[in-house]
Image (cartoon, rainbow, N blue to C red; front, side):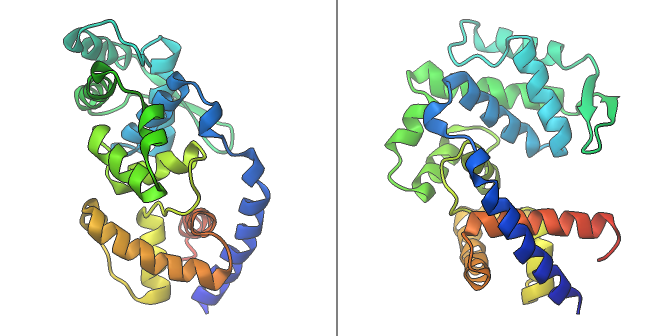
Length: 237
């Protein structure tokens, strides 16, 4: 019975997600700084809750440390990121409430972003050029995993969705995995999804689910995430 109600909610949510599709960003129109901001947000999102990741990326953007063409040496850039994150960050909840918090793992966050900047821009490349060179959505995901430190399959897929690059990849986070266990009996742990080949195997299973709903993979993925998150928050599951 629960899975039937969850499925009806996902189907209804798919309609809303599809209707809002025109509000998505178009990566062709984004500046390189905006692309790097989105990459930083997704890097940080692998280390903390998403609201904190947004606050962390916003802080670095506000103090001028989202730098596609960084003229600082690697060590200095990393040190400035760490210093910028020592002050508490304002986190805005979905209900509009605010609270102050400090991000954990400041040194790791700084290392991941500084190394990414050095790896891409230090070699005369850009995130835009990586996306243009990719021949498919999966190809874009693979090249991002190879070049953006802190990116696994989930983070790369989330980045590509957020910048409007594709709608045919799944962001297989814990909420989606819980749905697959509920609806398909699959018992999966997030740690196993760090391997791209296994991630794509589960993604193909979820693509079958999306086909049953009659919407794109990305649409069903987001609708499932929204539905399961609320269901767990409201103690329905």
